[in-house]
Image 1 (cartoon, rainbow, N blue to C red):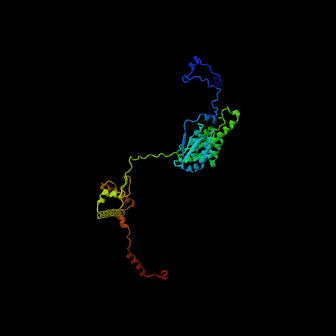
Image 2: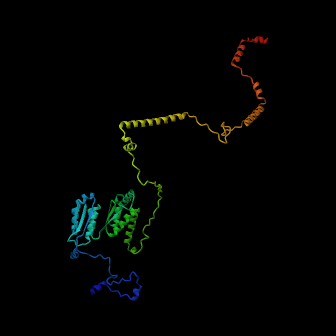
Length: 407
């Protein structure tokens, strides 16, 4: 007992009454632990060898099973002997059920490591997620762990999801290879998940990069940041200082997007529209279905004749429209001298006569003569007969010679 007390370190003094009063309510009932002191390294890895494990055997059998897709059946059947051999070294039994499409791992009586069954469960889970056997067996090593990151629900649009997933892989897998080298992890992008195998620190970085990439942050920014951190870690003088001044700060550019036109929702009826009636349903409604065949044919002929007569009447009306006289334009209130008849039917005849007399008097003054005199003085036009008679008389008269004129 004395040796154990010496190893635990110096015991702490018993607290006084004043110190207990000063304690907060949260730590009111907490007592000091003499076996826990600053000299103990809580993060020290405790070695657990096979000899220690054989002393304490497992009480019950533990088992895990995982389903796998149909396209992985051929690969698993080919590599299953190697899987059984790898698990046999750790005293784990495994079973492949091709009918049900499942893989099962379970502990045996010889299993001494209690955590190896969890690693075996991760192994079959990675094999089901299309991870090759050579990479999946790394999970059975001591410091290795795995992480299956689900990316299917991060983006709603399918096309956008495919583009961002391809951005994570990069051209010819260059981006994915860079992330693998910086994090020291094996990464496989398959379907709606990203499988990663490596140490806990690297897996944490991989998860951050993958989720940021699916949230529209390019992985190149995270790669640059990790490269700078790696160089700073190698410098011993900067180990205890803040690295914020060395890390790049990227500003987000808010690009203007096209505003989607909001379409007003139509008021949809509560119930769907009634189905269209078939030919038989229409005949049942009209009662035609129960008629004899000759009566039905006669009714159909009559219907056709009525339809034809309607069409003929419409054509006649259309032709007759060409012969209808157009409506005469009616004079407006302000229009004058357009020859249009005024709207009011009552006309004052006496006032109209006086107006016309005034017009005639003004014309006589302008001409300087009476209208009757002007008409009498005007020479009458000669008729065609009178013109012919005159021309004939001229021809009958003898022409005088030039000599007689000179005498």
